[in-house]
Image (cartoon, rainbow, N blue to C red; front, side):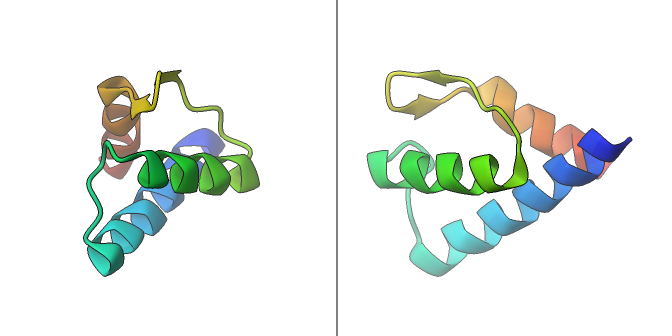
Length: 65
């Protein structure tokens, strides 16, 4: 339950950041920012090269429900 709350908060912060910067989800800058936010929250995200895995986004979205 605690992990879901943390993922949901991460999703909200990420969504807000993406809207403010109009960044592409797969840009290098975005991935760096997501890593920074996740690290602050203590959440480990999986990456393939510079791309955030879709499964990680799904994890955050599932936390909403």
